[in-house]
Image 1 (cartoon, rainbow, N blue to C red):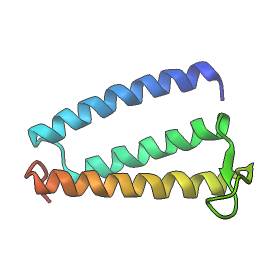
Image 2: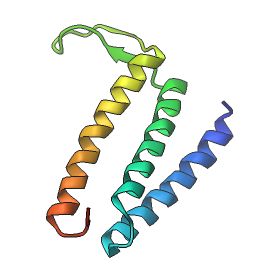
Image 3: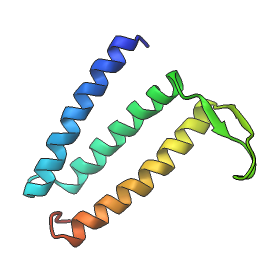
Image 4: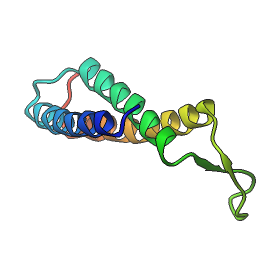
Length: 101
């Protein structure tokens, strides 16, 4: 992966994210589109983290043991983190009436 390609992809995804949130606030974006966008962002985040932040905490939270993350470690971390954030945002938009299912 070239650094320049990841920077361009990051900028493009940031613009797409902004447009997606504006469209969601206006009520013109479906829940399926939001989920698809969130999945695309997760894939991008895994690629970025694998190229830079390759370490994960290993063992109890109070200890300072880190190890090099495998692809599966990173997929699990990013997937679970984004699932929690996405669910919270999804429920918030639904509660505010900005999202119709």
